[in-house]
Image (cartoon, rainbow, N blue to C red; front, side):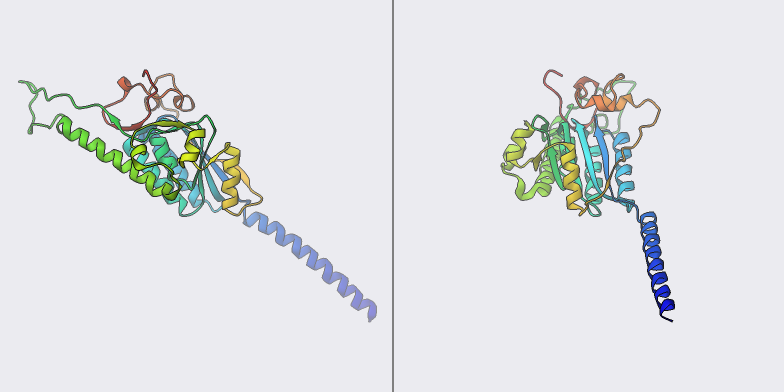
Length: 284
């Protein structure tokens, strides 16, 4: 009887160990290892490109394995509407997981606009940050002749140069308001200074509150994981693949690739007519 009791006790322990091991294996199978997703945002921000990035953000937010996202930003900005769309996509993702921005060589104009939507911004000491403002062409005068007629005095241009300038001022104020809304009390500079369109080194931007920390992408990943409460996690690149069709028009040059475009933003004379949150290097 005593031996039987001992045998049952030993069998109970063996069964418990087996069940514990099986539970661990099932848990690993059913509950994937948490991920910090990396999404690269490179080159000029045009709608066809930012739509792909926006979809990648949505996919990351819908994946229960993704517990934080880091945007690796190297861009001089781009179209106003494309920048705004990506800004709202990032805000939506922030409702589900922490989102950090890590600035590579540049997060200027529209690229800073989207970065400001992140929970925190990391940049390197020599990263270029800021350039808050709008640029555009003024419309040419209406040239109506015997072959080209219109139903209104501004059908061709959309309005006067004065009205176009007013619209640019409205967009600039919208840009500044978005930065103020997201950076809030972290900013240490006046609104008037934000509107001057200046660009700063990361070393300068950090004490101004335009960025949160000086550091690498690895630092941003570690901080995002900490905010998400992760100790063990995988780092997964969720950057969307660009279609094989020719998208060179998105990046300002037939030879430029997305990763190269941030270092050489589109010259003004190659831009289609429109409104831009875009940084142009001196001399372009």
